[in-house]
Image 1: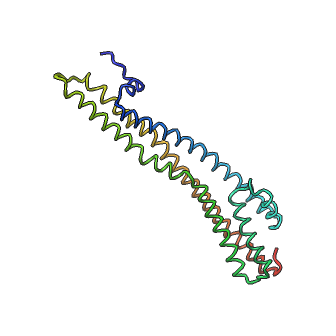
Image 2: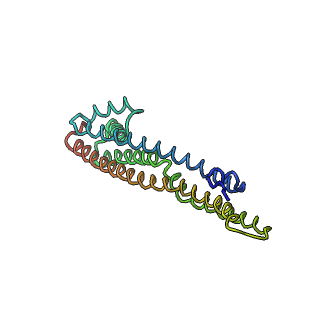
Image 3: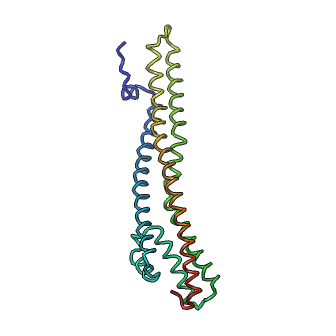
Length: 229
């Protein structure tokens, strides 16, 4: 009666289908945690870079100085700085072409910033769909392993003349391990996805606000000086 009900022992004695399901779920869980830690670091870095550039932007430095600094640090800059550089680059190109119409200048700068904004958001949102898939699919994969394991356990009992709880319990227990591991993979992925979605939404709002504020500054610049800032 002293049977070993440790998870490792149960898995070693489980059917190959349950073992395969558990192995897949463990690999998915490892990949999920890797994506979570990478995203935590990436979002933290983006926030720091955006805050640093925003302080510099409102510190009173000229747009040309900020643009020169952004061009030099293109590889190390954050999303907000790259969006600023895109808008400023398009604005200067249009001015070099002797275009002084305010609406054309502003439309060109806004389109450039919007395109840059979309690229930045696509990069920031990378791996979110993976976490969403892990959170939604893993429990069902684990449930499949459980159902298969229970079917396998009852099939084995069919040949026995006397069935007791001691004989049924190991097969049911090893099958339920698959559901437990499915939840183990899914719950962190769902929590992380919700957290990252909120953080990314805040970053998106901040970038959109900056685009509008910078557009207003450019518009005032155009109105005040035909030769540009």
